[in-house]
Image (tube, rainbow, N blue to C red; front, side, top):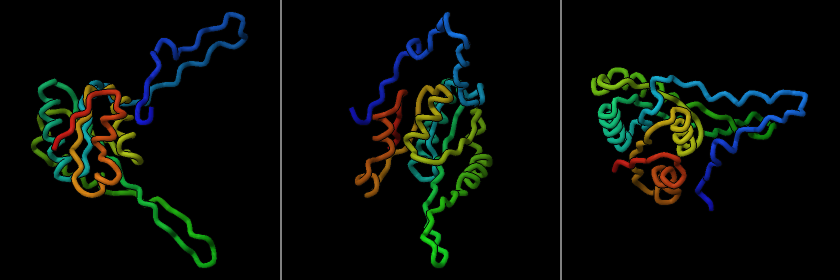
Length: 175
């Protein structure tokens, strides 16, 4: 079914050692490194918009009540830009989004974050995929996002709706 991912049980993914093989099995791939203090925390998508600020406020309360860490995720926009130099064909270049640095400074000065341990994680790519990936890496208890309003969300589908369909953990959508 499109939009759904079913993971195989962990015990089926491990290779079985072959006693006749001359080489031992390679070690399993290491998990991406993340701060263990934030394991089983609350992931929140944040871009500075009004709906993401409401989602952040809810996630702060949730993390505070559950004595968990807060993982604030900003998925940076990488805008494709055409560069044309004379006779050569145009080239598409990713222009980095420096908004994460600004958001990080704003969050560092925010009094409302003083009650919970938090980190800011920057990712680039598809918002739904990156939020779910961060949630998987940190074994998050939930992902909190703000709802999308406007024409873009109606045409392409909201981030919250797409995330709720594919996520492997609870998704809380704040209006």
